[in-house]
Amino acid sequence: MAVVRILGIDPGTLVVGFGCVEIGVRPPSGDAPRPLAMRASNAVPAAAATAGPVRLCELGVLRLGGRDAELPARLLELAEQFRALVARLLPQELAIEQAFYGKSVQAALRIGEARGVVLAEAARAGLSVHQFAPARVKRSVAGSGAASKQAVAAMVGQFVSLPGGPSAARLPADATDAVAVALARVEERSAPDWQSLAR
Image 1: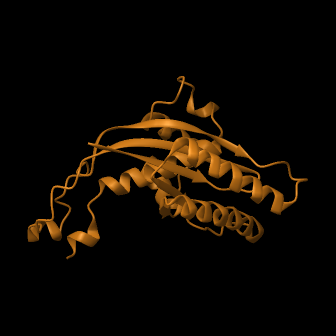
Image 2: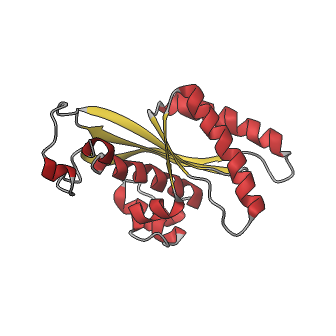
């Protein structure tokens, strides 16, 4: 059985959350065509692609400097810290939220700049990149696309064994959000591959 590491990132220009999870993946069973009934329904079991529990490797935050630091300097710090994080954790995949416009256009632009740095560094490292809408991440973990940060953090604590056994409520929201993004990728890996089923 292969092991895949997924690095989830919650981007920002002051604090960036990260969470790295590990899952066992069964090798493909071959290229045999699937029965027609399985192509048109949810007949593939949810656990078809993964085996065993999700293991949390590490979670935390990258601090990029205070608000008084110039944005270009903070983005450079993000690039350097993210590169070191990837070199240390050795993930194969990156999971990150898609760009999202909420209440503030300015905040969305700043997060977009941080996302750009992360995506460029992920490409440099050869990581497979998977992007998810914020509502999809919340739905994957908490069952509702409108779930609160507290609900997401609580569910993250139930999905993975937190290192040292701390309460999820005591962890930075940026870190638990990043783990939630990684778990959205775990869920996607466990679901049927609709592109291959449609052939």
